[in-house]
Amino acid sequence: MSYTAFLILILIVAIALILIVMVQNPKGGGLSSSFGGGGAQSLGGVQNTNNFLDRTTWTLAIAMFALILLANFAIPRDGDNNFKLDNTLDGVETTTPVENTTPTTNDSLK
Image (cartoon, rainbow, N blue to C red; front, top):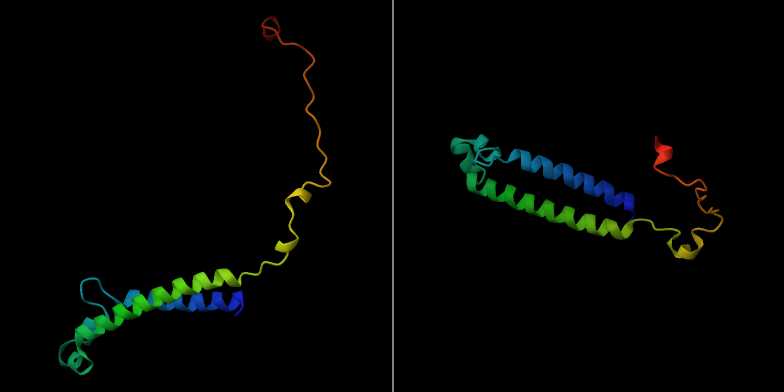
C-alpha cells in the first residue's frame, strides 16, 4: 500500500472518530437519549447504544494508531542509500577569521 493510501485511510478514520465522539454525551445523553421512550426499547435500548458507541470509539482509535504506525513504513525514502556524511561538505569553501591587529586600550575608548 502506498503512503497516499494510508493518509486517505487515516483521514477517513479521523473524521469518523470525530463524528462518533461528537454524537456521544458525557452525561448519558447524546444519540442514546434522543431515541427516548418506548422507541428506544425496540432499537436495543439506551445501554446497548452506549456500548456500541463506546466500542466504536475504541475500535476507531486503535485503527488510527495502527494506520499511523503502518504509514511510517510506507514513507518513500529514496536516496537514503547514497547518503555519506563525509561527502556533505565537499565544495564548501571555508575561510579563517581575520585577526584584529590594532590593540584596544582603555584610553582609546574615551
